[in-house]
Length: 283
Image (spheres, rainbow, N blue to C red):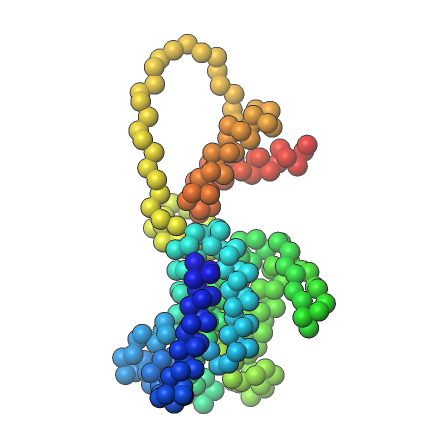
């Protein structure tokens, strides 16, 4: 799905250039970019189309880099459909937040919105929320590698987005006023909430977790009634040797994660994984 989205973004940008030369850039912005006037006229489709338009090659390239790295990570975690839903939901909610501020403060947030940034920021936020201590390496000035935990990236981007939203309201524009900071912020908030609900062991969120799954979970055939036989008491999982514990208890859970995604695990299965982590740490 990540590859499909990358190809789609490039294809849409080529089509955008074609329409800019044929119909003129104002036509594209009026009909396909997200704007207050467009939504007021009932062009709800702009909530999706704006995510596939870009303001230039560098704008497109930056979003593609973020999508490539974090899209693959979230696709491995949520599955193809789950990642796509998260990506589009983050972009849509981010766009809505930007437009909502446009209605409230038209002098500061009244312009049209284009770009996949809100969706990409949602993927970044979801990754950093789920694995805050995982290392991320960025090339500073495209040369110097800098490594830091994922949570640092989320905090920094969140701070930039908040300052970018507050700045125009207090008339202190320390960032580019042409950047849709509110859309970035909305995308990040969507990613954080999405991953927390998807990974929550609370049964109340079962319907939400089903939205992020790769597909319909496989139904296991009903087990035949067990025969009453005399046998020795089976050890509890925590009492097993590490090797047997992993092969008997952990391997089936890993297969389930591979087939249905980590959000499909029950609270008991999560406890088993934690116990496995403790056992491995003691070795």
